[in-house]
Length: 321
Length: 261
Image 1 (cartoon, rainbow over the protein chains, first blue to last red):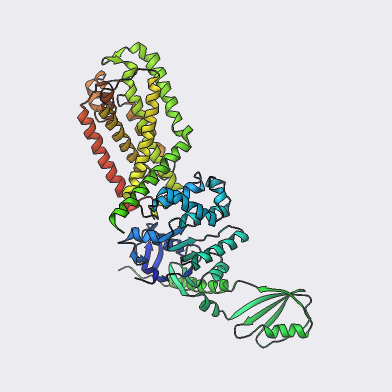
Image 2 (image 1 turned 135 degrees about the vertical axis):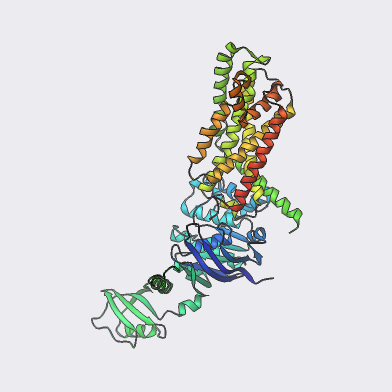
């Protein structure tokens, strides 16, 4: 029995218009993992998910889900997966209960059992009161939760979510995070694609970054963030003196009369800054990161691929023989 | 997983697709079930009562009784075709076909689910029109088995054709082109309102190339025991069409044409 929830080997996809969406992509997802699949728009994330879930035909390579090859054991592989796609793809005219019960039926769950299961899943996602409402009458956040409910009806071993929190407000996003964390703690493997890097950092243990159809990073979240050399903090203070000190590689900048920016190298601690603030009787009212740390790294990694591919494009064309 | 469990689950999936389809057209019954009742009532009033009374007897029955099987068949053909064409295309358009594609539903059962959804609408519409017809004319059924087989096989054939149309359709216009420009002329020229024996030899021979003629006449035979063509020809032709269309539809779905990138 394999330890891997997903094994992808040398996966490639070229669309009919000759666009090469994936180039020799290989990675594995361990059972019980919570992994982020990141990348800019058009990087190949949705194509990868589409191939795993058999919505997209692959051109080359192998995909196994819990040891079941999608080439030879597709139906067994499908039983392990619950998919929450990026766009709302349920019938807007069906009720929430009809949508989830029908979906369970497609997985072979008898109707009476599916109706009972629907009660549980819709309640977990706060949709029980809306079970007889047509999907089109739901808010954006509710529709997102309905797609999660639908994906969970057959109790999948792995849940794949393609930007599940896009366009939902902060409160709902946080409650969805908590829900996904609980689900992962209960043993469900989760693959998440997202544009919110904070979301990936908060939720995921491992990360795969994909750009222009290639994997540019595949590591643990912890390892990735340690690569950041400098982190910038913004401190809201009650006053800022005219002269800012030199604190041995820690750079302080005055952003305005009440805000101070601190560039902190990773080998340094904030204590030095707080010591100076305390010595000068400056009160710190609040503090936050200037930018998401992961975002900086993400930009570095994807910019690197872009510039490399631009260089490759500039190679002189070879003459046809 | 044992094959017995697997087969049971596949049948539950089939049942779910058919239930979803039936729920869909009953939810919009004003658009799906009511119009044929009204349209066919008008046919009965205009062609049956007003014009028919001047036509007199046709093959030993009143003109109204003569045209009734054809009118029922018209609504069965149109409804079974358009149900699958619009439902499958909408599922593609709204992308809820993905609900089926990600699930372990065998392709054959997806095809059967949509086809039987269309067949059920065709049969229900046929029943509605028959009830309407019974208000205008006393219906006699010559052979129940022929009536049932012809109507069932015809609705299956056109439901499958509707699915093939939906697979290739890229816009809602594409699913109305065939019903408007192909099905309607074939149906009107398929001997619904007349016997091809009334036509000159040349046009009789041309009419024999129209598949709807065989279905209308096969169905008419079941009602009044008269047909322009031998009943066995009708049943063979419908069966050949079903097998051909079903094979094409299955191939398209298994290859994912129009539904998988």
